[in-house]
Length: 178
Length: 322
Image 1 (spheres, rainbow over the protein chains, first blue to last red):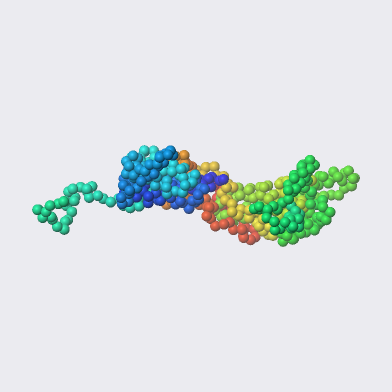
Image 2 (image 1 turned 90 degrees about the vertical axis):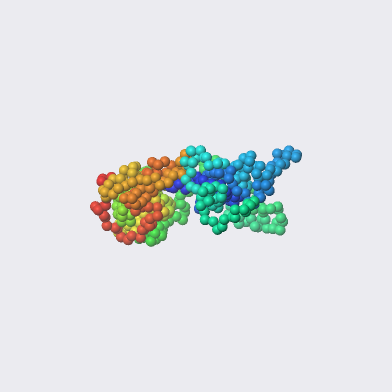
């Protein structure tokens, strides 16, 4: 193999490091996006037998947003293997226990169950907050676009800015706010 | 095996409608052991013996040589062609034989023809490549020429033209040196029979076309591309600047860097590598390819140049001399 072909191969199979901000993102919809990068499905050279998957670093997994009433409704099932060993844990309980668990399970479930899945999962790094080790952050060269913009909450806007905002009407002085 | 396959339907014909579980057996149980025994007997005799085609009863050397010329659409002088096919080893063997039988017939071997043919081919290939790759330096052209004139390439061409059985040599099957030598001698014989232009087209069609689909840069190894490139650029007085334009997985084993070369702030080329130094070197190589007109996506080499191209060596630049 000539030198030119060797570096062409090297560049073709280089692993890119992506970062994904999970803040206010639906973990189950995000999983489908993250999965594509993890498995290398966004590359023209993709093939199931081809080791061309990238690395994805997920940050802010503590701030994911579940749909509707899912924090209370969704249950995660586990069985110890012993009789009576089944247990159902609610999403909010799982999230309190480990804030990286829900997004991890979502990505794991989005992939087909084969021998490659656990190795692919090794290429996913999840951090509950914004703090990522420096040596990992240095590898990151691409950002995956979020599925939806992070909304601004009214109570996060400074008070004087809210006061300055033009109003349609003032409440009467004797009006009782609930 | 062909014999077995041909008569198998007769043997199994009676069982045509009988289902024998899944696949139908096609080869009889006795075949494998029989073949094994045959192989063992053959090995005991000292391996498979390949009989030279020219020892067969109906072998007609004259007809074969005539057909050889006609197949190639060339008119050879029969005597010269016979001489081209006669290897030195065969002449020595025949002389020994004649000494024993005490008579003397002079035979000519192909050494002279080969020398003439080799000289012509070298000259022509050089001229042709200079015309086909106008920007490529003389060192690179020499590299390609050496590759085309190498024993392996010539032997391969010779073998596939069907010289293997016609060559007169003391051994069979003939080795690569003999094959290559015979081919070069055939070119020499053609040179005497049909003139230079016809021979040039023969060489073009059978030897130079071996470059099809090959990367010509691989035949010329540049030791220090960066120094060569800076020397070339220095003459024009432009400003060459390498920039790191991409990196991936910096702290990992699979780190990959991309370096771009900028000539007066315009991108000239880019190269990849596992370190920045390698990437820079590869970028320099890419730039040289661009300057020499031998990029990956270049237009294919023209194999249809007619006649013998005129020499342009004087106007051609040499990289090492400058």
